[in-house]
Image 1 (cartoon, rainbow, N blue to C red):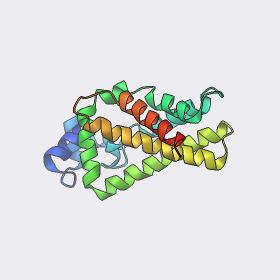
Image 2 (cartoon, rainbow, N blue to C red):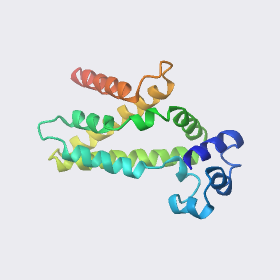
Image 3 (cartoon, rainbow, N blue to C red):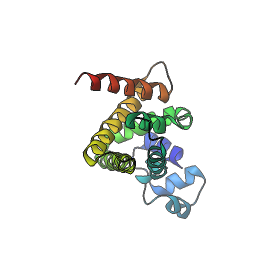
Image 4 (cartoon, rainbow, N blue to C red):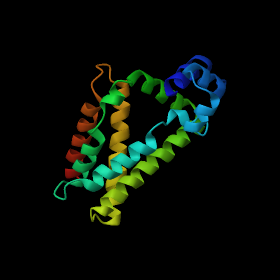
Length: 177
């Protein structure tokens, strides 16, 4: 359904595309669409709640001796093949988010939820409240920058490449503060 929505949003425009058209293009009923998504905005954010929960679980379960940023990077790089196979759709999605305020606001809310989930996972690892909040915020920023670089990468390197490079840069710059 997401692919159908992105195709229609690209062809017709976000505002002019209806849920009925998305459902028809995807080969499902409107009822099926609404069983999965609350509205047409939500179709651009499939699986994000699951992604956030998986990141939380992975960071919380990381070995105690693993540094917090390393645990977060491992969690972020655990399953990126799915995204790499959908780069073009992700690029179209990014364009839609960049051009619609309501979609950008939804993206910010999801980013804030990801940051809070990471901070909570770090607190479960006995990281102090302030250190957990700061580490989560910095890690999510590094993640967002890596995704942006991945989407713009003319060499089409994998997302994991950009994540590792971003976190390495974060490690290097943190040592110079």
